[in-house]
Length: 81
Image (cartoon, rainbow, N blue to C red; front, side):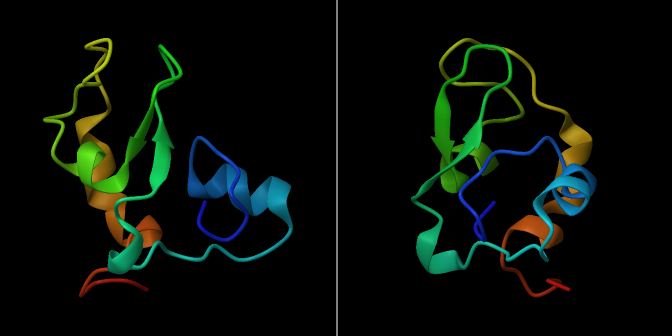
């Protein structure tokens, strides 16, 4: 999470455990390491993650393609809430 530098599985986990609101990653920081592959532990930048075709570029494990529907909660966009 951009707000605390800790990896959480989802925004709900963050809300329960962190004790503060989520801060979305600004576009200017999309080259920061911000995504952790749960299978191999490889860190990806936001750009790498968004361009990964839902597969870890290091180990080939699949990322949930449905997560794309939640980008606005994590990454700055026109739809950021």
